[in-house]
Amino acid sequence: TMYEGDQEPGRYYVGIDVGTGSVRAALVDQTGILLAFAEQPIKMWEPQFNYHEQSSEDIWAACCVVTKKVVQGINLNRIRGLGFDATCSLVVLDKQFHPLPVNREGDSCRNIIMWLDHRAVSQVHRINETKHSVLQYVGGVMSVEMQAPKLLWLKENLRETCWDKAGHFFDLPDFLSWKATGVTARSLCSLVCKWTYSAKKGWDDSFWKMIGLEDIIADNYNKIGNVVMPPGTSLGSGLTPEAAKDLGLPAGIAVAASLIDAHAGGLGMIGADVKGHGLTCEGQPITSRLAVICGTSSCHMGISKDPVFVPGVWGPYFSAMVPGFWLNEGGQSVTGKLIDHMVQGHAAFAELQAKATARCQSIYAYLNSHLDLIKKAQPVGFLTVDLHVWPDFHGNRSPLADLTLKGMVTGLTLSQDLDDLAILYLATVQAIAFGTRFIMEAMKAAGHSLSTLFLCGGLSKNPLFVQMHADITGVPVVLSQEVESVLVGAAILGACASGDFTSVQEAMAKMSKVGKVVFPRHEDKRYYDKKYQVFLKLVEHQKEYSKIMSGE
Image (cartoon, rainbow, N blue to C red):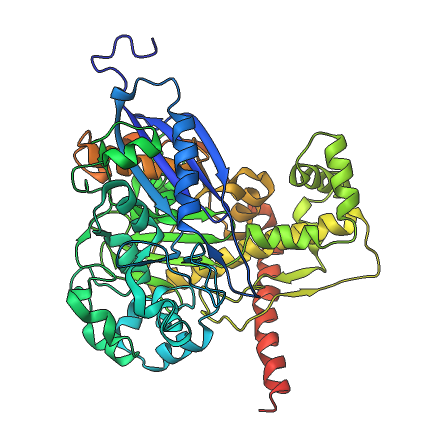
């Protein structure tokens, strides 16, 4: 067997990751290698624009399908622990833990308001007008994607059918650990990052009263959680017999307090040993690394020994990702989703699909090779000298924290062929990388020292996306050996809960590995500095336009 010579037979951990559009599971060994992987789509409803809903029963069923797949044919006694991560969507259950509708249709199957739902705009506006001190810990302004505005929306809009009947409001990662263990304890990660909980001081009664949600305080905050555990802590007596049967795992194995999906990606990658790669961060503390988890949206995770307050960037959150460190979290609301939107909406998309299919390539692999074909002698990035994109098609999360901002494209012509599509795609990828640079500069100005990017998630599989991030930020990009760093992060939680490692830090160091390092092309720096000047001008101009139109 592969473990001959080892004293210990192999120990395995299961990580379950609930993303926006699918649930993925992996079987991971104690060195962080993925031995099996499965994926299952989950349902999403959009009853109207900016309203996005899911079903907790549908999601749990998908968790069961993928978990059974990854442990097929495995000696179940070797499985030591289970960890979950998920998007920070809001799950609503009644006092008997049954689903409640978060919609006017009264469909109780749809009992989740998704993370990217923007229905609570007027509520978040009123919350921000209070200027309450808890807002200092979310970059000064709360996001419409956080939970307090969504709770307020439910109270104001679905009083009888939902709010009055509600017994439990869970962040999705905490719903999953409850479903597995029967324990309603919440993860510090969810409550601190999305619910205004303080790791040092707990809940702030005055905040909930001030925003009109004093009912939440009842029974010592029983509806939103009053037992809070650091991520990776073992919950209750482990997996309940009922959940074990559902998942195809042994009852009683350790189940960890969970993480939000982006934080699991950060955990699965930021602690990797970088020796021998010629990186400046080799001799530097872990605080010099910025983890970027890029999928549908992107999250930028930086940690520090002391709290750093960055305007427009969430945090500082104590122990929300790596125990003992403060976390700042920047983000871009749409990245992978924006690239898809730009490419699929283009007149040449059908032609692109046909050509990519004929070559058995993904559309992005085809576009990347097409760009190489048309770039002639110059570097590929120079094809966008007169095409510029501002990427905030779904508002700006960081560092401007302004959801009224829109997307912009300047430099369009009458031509709509495949070359134009490829160049528009390139300009969009570059715009996302400039957005990362914008976030990094805000973090540095506030006191972070960042010398390396660590990228994971779906977009990190795209070599153009990775190279543009290196060239545009001017720092090396480290890719983890396991592209699925988020699943490694979830498995690390299970490994910690099992007691096989003494700490999250030890598990991180042993279970995350560096794959490839991509260095910036410094000879192109001047070009990207000029593009970045244009990038910043775009948003300045957009604000001027709206000033003109509102007649100020």
